[in-house]
Amino acid sequence: MSETEKSLPPKDAASAPESSSRRRFLGGVAAAPVIAGLSGLPKAMAAVDDGSQVHTEDILGPVDPATRQLQAARVRRRALILARNRPLPTHVNNGDETTYPNFIGNFHKGLPHTPDGLVDPAAYAAFRSALNSGNTANFASVPPGCTDPAQQRPMTDPQSGLSFQLSGPDSASGFMPSAPSVGSAETAAEMVEDYWAACVRDVPFTHYATDPLIALACNELSGLTDYKAPKVNGKVTPQTFMRNDYPGSLVGPYMSQFLVRPTPIGTSEINNHHMTFLPGTNFMTAYDEWLARQNGCAPPATRPYDPVHRIIRDARGMGTNVEVDALAQSYFQALLLLATTTDVVPQLGMPSGIGGLGAPPDQNHPYRANPTAFALQEPLGELGGAWILSVLWEVSQRAVAAQWYQKYYVHRRCRPEYYGGLVHNMVANGASYPIHPQVLNSQALAKVFSLTGTYLLPMAFPEGSPTHPSYGSGHATVAGACVTILKAFFDESFPITNPVVPTDDGLSLVPYTGADADQLTVGGELNKIATNVSLARNFVGVHWRSDGFQSNLLGEAVAIGLLEEMGYTYNIPFPNGFNLTKFDGTQITVGASRS
Image 1 (cartoon, rainbow, N blue to C red):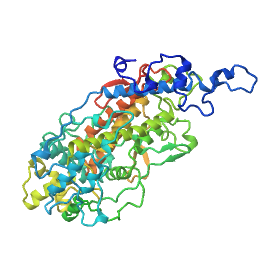
Image 2 (image 1 turned 60 degrees about the vertical axis):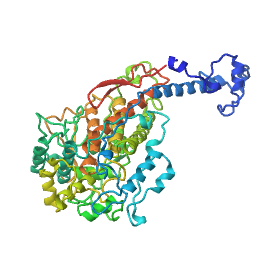
Image 3 (image 1 turned 90 degrees about the vertical axis):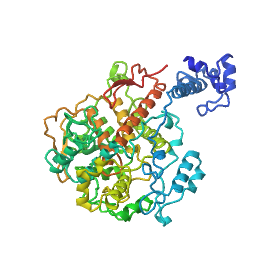
Image 4 (image 1 turned 135 degrees about the vertical axis):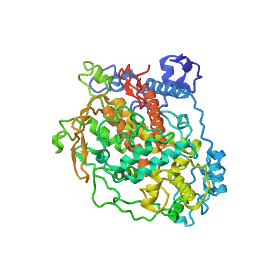
């Protein structure tokens, strides 16, 4: 027991020292529930064995229920102490709410706006007051922006960030640095990237190296001030365009293998053919439509989907996928691909090299590190299949709670679509806002105008962005958390052979034949899937680059915190914990068993 734990006063009888006899101690908890049918059954009843007596020691295992109950309480208490002793972050936003009294740098979608797109200050004050109070009833006083109540889109879960977590870091204990200000060069650079991303949604990823529009985008992005994205010799290239430089994520095809390969699931498969919007489809390029969405009015229900389902081959397909996905869906599929052994694949009717990868567990996993001791055992509920399935979905909820605290209670950053309205009103209508000139003078903005006739950011979804603040990204936080769990559980160095890419029409897969085809690894492709999902939200116009990058890091921290606490729960020895390579390349071990 740690010195910190010793200093805590006992909370109840179960946490008090055992200073009395065992009979007296058991008497003190006799009312506590134990295994059905064994409550109050003395062990002496098993002393005479005539074949009819119950051997309680055979049923109860190494400890009786009362002792087990005490041990369980101690495990939870030690995890509580670990959580309580985590450093408390200082949450600081970028100050835009104070700097700009018209709140142009902040999120207020769904509130009433003036014809020039500025939020009603009284409505914003009511919104902020409800958040600051944490009182559910006060949200009812926030005025809606849409004049038709039946069309009003609600705010997305503004109180989620205030929920408490019984495992893993508390939602308020995460940290994200201040978002770039609405008037900064970095925000302008991120908007230029989003304008270019909107222009290239229909370019197949396999054409990036030769497409002239991608070349124009790379050239302009290379010269921007405060553009924080991967570069080669100071230049953005087709290989680094709309990517992050996490270890291994710049290797091989743009799309992670986990997003394109068929996924074995039990005795079936997920073929990874997705619905997507028709090529060339853009929304919110008319000012009246843009203003209606800022007021929270829902779009028409009709959606122009391609009647043919396709493997994700371009940014439009990837963007549609992250509009309607279950947040941990992609990482669940990655888990299935990693865990399914290759000898199962032919039985499922999938071609050799396309199905399960049969990736081994982390080198520190007890069953791998000490195979002799576990020769007659296989893991399931403890560090096995049931365990990793549960942890993957659990950590996604913890990530959402942590991010929703940042979104609503710290940063409240505006969405790119709103910033596009500021740009449009400046260029087309002579409005004056503190927007950095590098976006106003960009080739990307000129290209958007030539395509749509406005300076608004073309949106990939008819509703535009979700109805919650931009910084940070929920998808990216969940990506960071789930990928971290998978990188911990599996051997990151395991090679992924026979990589594939979609055909131009997205109807089938063909071998990837690039010079780096033999360099793909589990760790690199997991980092890549985090990048793909995070930046897919930029491709569709609903997020900024910094939203995704910082959210990946927040999700990573949430996952590491959860694994730390789980170290108290293992029965089998796990002295070293999982090996893990963080997004910044730092190698750590985490989740070792704790006494």
